[in-house]
Amino acid sequence: MSGCCENGCEITARNERQRTTLKWVLAINAVMFLVIVAAALYADSTALLSDSLDNLGDAITYALSLYAIALGARAKAKVALFKGVLILAAALAIAGQIAWKLAHPAVPIFEAMGAFSLLGLAANGICFGLLWRHRHEDINMSSVWECSRNDIASNISVFVAALGVWATGAAWPDLLVAAALVVVLLRSALRVISSARRELHASS
Image (cartoon, rainbow, N blue to C red; front, side, top):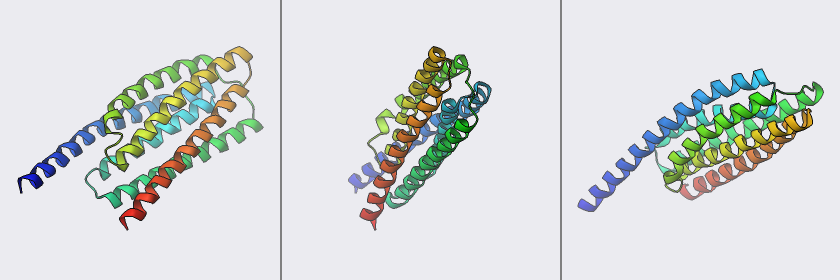
């Protein structure tokens, strides 16, 4: 009986730790979405815009993860599946923006790209550190950590794109990095969706 009580208390404590962490990363990503989307529109950067959409997707993901903390394994798998679909939608949105930019080329402002990609990297580095200890706890937190890892790669890629635009005076580095981010997001979406489907199958 005491063993059950200890297990229940341990799960409750873990859920509370997860809830606190998710509230922090949700707040950080919501603020960063507003900051980065404004910077992307000012800089006319597709790569930076993709970064801002990533922040929006993450904010929604973290809100869903907060909801899923106390749910059972099957419900968590359904939430993770929805997260995977959100990542996929972000990838398709960026692909559409790339196509539009190819038809309407413009050189982005590399200074804004570089500065705000580094700001995003700092913010996402904090989120990554906060989520690190939760990454193997369950599918809910594992999929959240996957999003955070994508963010780090996205920020670094945008900074590289800014350097490319500065060096060449052309828009293609911005579009090239945006295309690479589409591939990263597609792979991530497939991993999260596949993992969620396996979890759903196992719990059915």
